[in-house]
Length: 407
Image 1 (cartoon, helix red, strand yellow):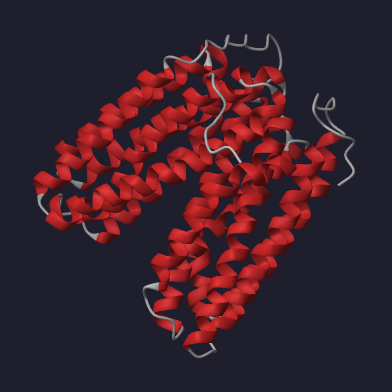
Image 2: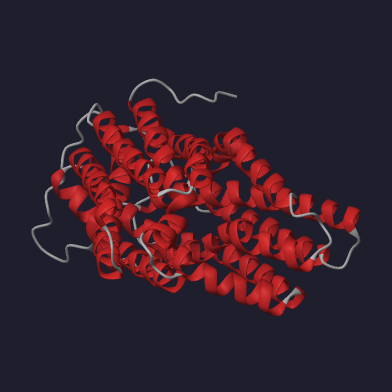
């Protein structure tokens, strides 16, 4: 299996993603400490600010994709990365909650522009039968970049000084600007003329696509199982040692890097992607059952079930991600890829916003019944995707790489 993306636009996108996500990893590991210990915000203020920023990202997703279609995705992506870099550097001046809200919301808007443009760039610069594979390479690269950034960010956390945090922030800003310079080497994808009549944001009127976006966004709440619910479950509700949290996180990251491209092979067509989404719901539901059962066993049994559950979860994660790319590309019209990819990203942002409340309330508030409820939810969401894809297939011409919609 190749771990390096093919030469050409895919490799440039991969390199830019690596540079950008190293910076993202730096910020992720130290942002809460910087904002609370250096800026002086309360944990509640940080949470409220991040939620508001996430909401801005949700609302800006489709319009940002529309912008990428109109001005050209390469220019929109470069502009979004430059704006994000400048705004990130502006964090060094933040001294109040109001300033944090302003910078955070503006950064979320810049990130939304970059996300929508990236999807349109892939659609415009990569052949249709390679788009899902390219997204798989980018996701594997994202995991590598965030992991490297998280390790480097640990030095700033260990120092716990304002100078260390400011250095980290400025490094993150430089990474975003460097990614913009790399993205400028991508081939130009011509902008698409705005429709002369009818609505501009057609993706927001495409009911089958919106239904898929909602299902996929709710399914994406499973990402918080590993990052939020499982660590708290292990520490407070099982006999497993706390170091299992780090082990399971490292195993997840390694498997995504090694297997995401392979998992994407089954999701190149619309029928294959729909089936992958259904399979994802099944194995993520199984993971929830195994996590729930781990709380009632002695240490060796708890460790075994946690490992099996994490393996099932990462398989579902791989299938779910690949399915989303295949369906979002396959259902989007050629002249509106930007806004469709932006709308697809809106679902993920919605799931990210809801996940902390839903996942912790069920898994930790209800315990075993909550885990089983989550499992049933993911099973249902995955099962609903194939009929929604069939519905969407009846409303548009078939994709040039699609098989008949027997899912």
